[in-house]
Image 1 (tube, rainbow, N blue to C red):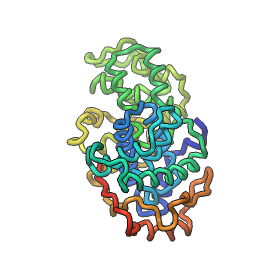
Image 2 (image 1 turned 120 degrees about the vertical axis):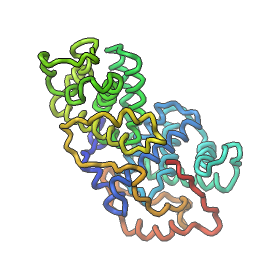
Image 3 (image 1 turned 90 degrees about the horizontal axis):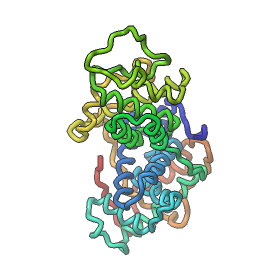
Image 4 (image 1 turned 135 degrees about the vertical axis):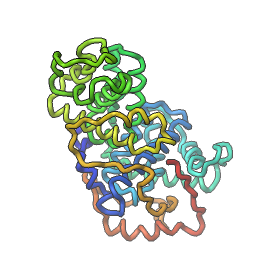
Length: 358
């Protein structure tokens, strides 16, 4: 992965959403999770391969490292990422079909009830195209988005362990896209964290801790092993770390990735995500000293609902202003000037009601 797409964890405190608006880090991460959830639902309804959805999710996170969630609605960006991915991943879908399914998801209606020639679908097509132009510039036309799933396949082939570990690791890697891990760490770091966490979950509460699984050197063989934990081999719990030959710096990154995943799971409402309950019982690595990122999703302060995405008057035939290239933009005077217009939809156009898909 190119270095411009790997940010330090501290960059989450300095995103445009946090610096130029009323967003907190916790609120932005909550809305990123909701945006990726919407993206996955949209991609699934369009019948896209998971590889295309993972690529689109990576672009979604990259976009919001350079633009504010207050300026671009997460659902519009998600739809544009999906549409662009259908072209780069060779699973083409018509723009009208993407807009039609998107409208169905936004309004909570069955797609069969959404007329392809409706004004709302026409409006969404325009929004997707306008947002796509900004997305292309934010990505610097760099469409390569390596996935941790490819690294997991290598791990599975190298160590054909219990299929439950493989299934668990695969699912955790899916969930990793609901966090910003893809813009914080290289794919092999994320894959290793998913694999180690899956091993720990399957092995049970009396198995080796996460600290011992990712330590730079294996624990002393003289230490007693609880009778309920009998790994297949002395190094089974450390397979991922030893497979890659991680340095101490790499191990520190795996530790941070593990702690972010566990913090994300702990923030979930267990009534809506019962599958995450076993993971919330796992203690994070003690070596991760980063600041806390997540708050319980049920306690994240809700900002005022963003208006539906309607292009400001006079902008229907142009892209929103953007000339920031590879740099994170501050809010420009033009952004500030456009905000009141964006908050007031054009009288001739119907406002899109958005469902809360969290």
